[in-house]
Amino acid sequence: LPATVEVAAILERDSMPAETYAIFATGAGCGAITMGGNVHTDSYDSTAMTMGAGGKPIADAFGGAVGTNGNLSIGGQVVVNGNLDTPRTGVGNCNNGNITAITASGQATVSGDTIQLPQAKTYPAPAGPDPLYMPTTTSLGITPSSSCADFAIPIATATCFKDPFTTMFTITATGATPIVLPNIALSGGARVILNTATPATPVTLNVNSFVMTGNSTLSLAPNTSVVMNVAGQGITGEVIDFTGGSLSNGSYDPSRFQILYAGTGTIKLTGGNSTAATVYAPNASVAMHGNGDFYGSILSNRFTDIGGASIHYDRSLGSKFNTL
Image (cartoon, one colour):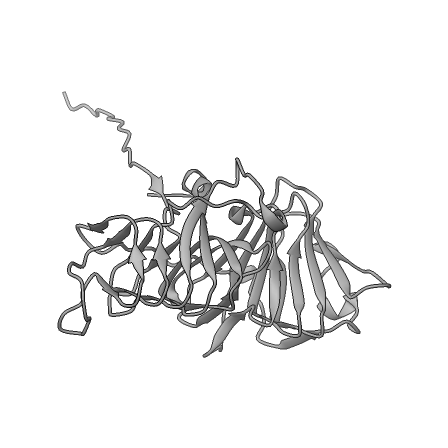
């Protein structure tokens, strides 16, 4: 007699930590990671911090691993306090016909091992803003003389309060609906604090681009997490430029401020007293400016830091983000 047999199976896939490097560059060429000057990488644990001078976490001289599908080029006083992971081999000059693992000059060193990856690492591009909440490509400048009405945020999405005695705007998300903003330019010392009415729900901020100048500030309120989805529509240069201002995340937990960008534009970052974030932009170029501290992890196509900005990797990120 004919019979139908139903067979059920469970397919299991191992997950791996998605954030295991202070810096990873997906680029396969020479200088995919370029660092010079007085730069170093190291690590700390935001779940068990010991605070030091200036109220900043004390970092350990290990755990600041870097990785790239191409070449690491370091010079000056650079110290990588960790391993270098790359599918490349060899030390010395790099060119298109011979892409070495590392090119070092001056007193630059990698304290750990150079580990040859069996193959290049691939990272999928982030999905980007939900099409239902896609930002426009108009420009919006925010200065101390601006008003909350200038943000044009629907009241069902967030509320805005401007302190009448300071240059501070507090934007409080009222739920899970994304806050949608176009090409934003903060200037003149304008200060924007992102807050949430429901601490368990991250604030989703969809922007087309975001620029800070004139000592402006973007801050996180206590118990607030933010996911910044950058669309970058029509932008051929910088989609993010924080070099004229500062990002403040006083929790020093970089998972609380995530920057996601799928495009090929440029991201310019600067460190600060409490700059803590993760950057996931596998197709973009990231450049660090200034000599401030950056707490977190940066994944990009190319990475450049030739000033004095040091990267402090948060070891707890490995348990907070996973990939299949």
